Length: 184
Image (cartoon, rainbow, N blue to C red):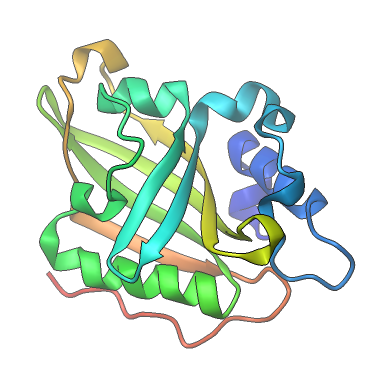
């Protein structure tokens, strides 16, 4: 386990719950045994996303802390639409690496809200197969920071406008050739 996961209580919990779902020798677990309640106090900072196709990743579960920061519950909404257009292809490449190679990611980004332009987040993303092994999902633990209370943010405008960085997390298969950060 990499240091960034060990040092963050949200990430440590998400990784431990995710890892418990894996059978011996399995790189990527299925959602079959996933119980969100196992995340305990970290549940408000969790997001579950489903891959619809290469350019469409829908929110399926949104923790209350994440929803409060966004000031909406975007279940069913394409996650990539929150990101500025120039980084969406890069992020889709990362989702594809997570899906078809089997790796995780730690993503750091800036977040721009109506009432606070200087906020940030770091997110641990881990892949899951759908129930019965069908479909592709991603479990995200979100650690956000900023000055204002979530009720004062006024809604999310964009993510990754000024800063977006992804690093690969080896979950047992090594790391593939990973997407290159976009030059902006």
